[in-house]
Image (cartoon, rainbow, N blue to C red):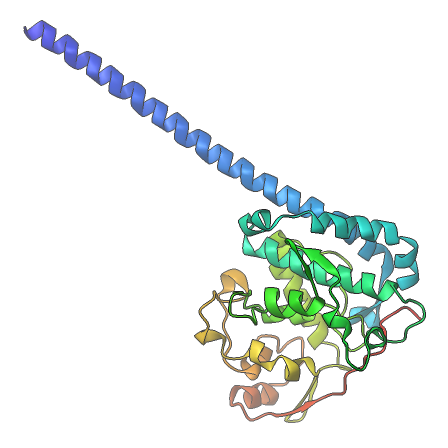
Length: 305
């Protein structure tokens, strides 16, 4: 009886060992699949935007010592088939696929879509236009034209920016990311520079940070004279995006840095070096004592001269 019991116990131990080994193998396989799947999504997203990145590098010209850019719309028009192919690739992305991406990949997709469709809209009348506003009318706006087949709908530029990106509708969450205002480009001189490459999720934070510094360092658009901030109208139109972030339900912006700002001055202080602020000016902003003057916005086309 003792020998039989020992043999039985030994068999049970071996069986448990085999089960444990199988479980470890399954967990390892699952983890491997997860990593492989994540890498595949990353590669897929990067590849998706490569054609647009190539076009931007060819047809966006840096000016003013890097402070801004001009767009070679003539060159874009000559390569309009490549732009159309890219837009068709964006249109093929299903909403269910988009929703599986992480939020950085989603936001990069939406910013690129906005910029690419804006260029495509300009090309419909270029070179017969001097401003994107020429594409609208007394009762219409270029930003309200349904031109962008995306995620199962045909969207306007306003819907991409204000509803999907900024979350201005009750049923859209948005991304709580004020720096997008220095990335989406409205084809105008007053806009922040159109970046010379496409946005991609894996480096989106650094790209947005660079765009913000670039725009704020441009003294023709933003500067502080004495105790007076002279800022782009962007900060007037979208001031709420730079303020009261701490009370929002969505996650903090600026990724792992976990940054929230409650006032425009707090936001600007994050970029005090780009604005080249003196110590007294920094103190003025910290005490919320700065006067603010918003500069005129230049709606002329941002095309190459």
